[in-house]
Image 1 (cartoon, protein in one colour):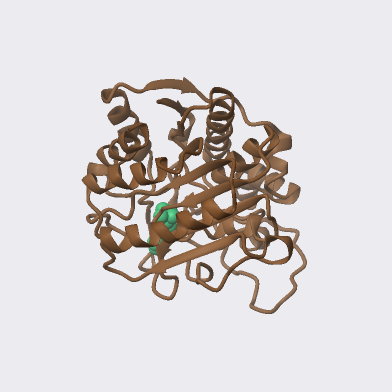
Image 2 (cartoon, protein in one colour; image 1 turned 120 degrees about the vertical axis):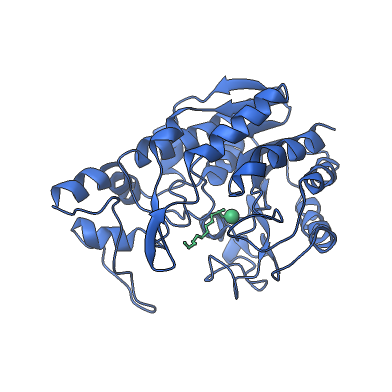
Length: 340
Ligand code: OKP
Ligand code: ZN
């Protein structure tokens, strides 16, 4: 299987607000390095990502947001702020209709949904490279007809058109889906198997029928991102019926998870998708330090085999997974199930 990767992720390691303290984020460079070495050991071929096309990025994210992300670190520094990362401290109030503020501190609140990550000096470069990985992997898949994997870091599925949060800055899965559409597909399915609901991906495509979003995740009543991911969120307008959430409780095991997968795959089949983007989070793993499902390393192989049986061309983009000691084995297990 073709693996698309980049070294440029390494300049990004955010701080995050955790238990009221700023800590070095769970989402760090070791994650991608360990996945990369496990994939090399398993004999996969690596391809360097192409730079992302700005027009493609602009079809997924707002121009204001992209300009903000590109300049936030420099503006933060020149504002005299002393913190290790650029973070907001106030967010739009429920029910308000905020005008975009002009200064960096107001814009940090306007353009973020969570205080679990910040804009660091290397964030923009890393996020651009990650989105470039997704686009390259998607293009390679459409042109070769075979499955590809994008070793994306930072992850993307919590990023909306104009907000970062949940360790995500640019929405890699959305970039991959849009790439497949641009290459000629009529409808693309996104299957998000990360432990956390892909609220950013959902919101980007919520009113569109050319992208079906199906997500299996921890119930937002008790898990991040809290404010999206409920079963009654089904899309609006032309997108009505093209958003399918399957929330599950803490402690969910593989059998229950696979039952939900059957329901989700039935949606993919009835929507007649031409291709599938998988948002692969391996934070459903039993020993994940920030998640509460109980899947094992061995479970990822039959999970992927079942998805492969749909017979669709697949591009995988990496999302979460924080048990670094097992992250490589978990991804290798999943990809072995996709290869048959
Ligand atoms: C990103 B992905 C508090 C924890 C906040 C939320 C989880 C982000 C997960 N410090 N982190 O979906 O794996
Ligand atoms: Zn996650």
